[in-house]
Length: 108
Image 1: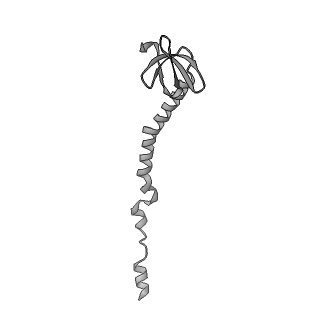
Image 2 (image 1 turned 180 degrees about the horizontal axis):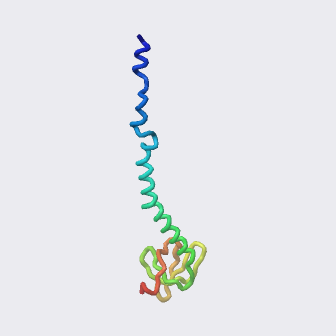
Image 3 (image 1 turned 135 degrees about the vertical axis):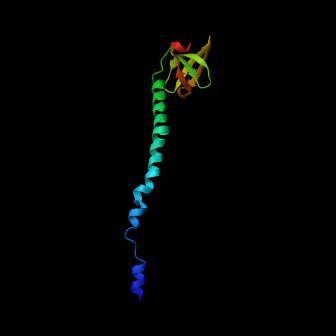
């Protein structure tokens, strides 16, 4: 009597095939992570690497733009700071992180 009930409650042998397994359940999450990596994370890392290289290559005489929008010429480069000449007899000390870009001759 109780054995018939036990057999009736047993696992269906075909249940695992229709569900798609454990990997198929994570496939959308994996796909979303891959899309985020290539669309957001990787370009951001590339941009940060380019900015770091630009800041490390600063030298006297470079024409720069600061994060505040000031245009100037690098007068002196120190380990953590840059002295920028923004007008005649006006020199301002900035942290290297505040230099946004180095201007080229085309920007003039």
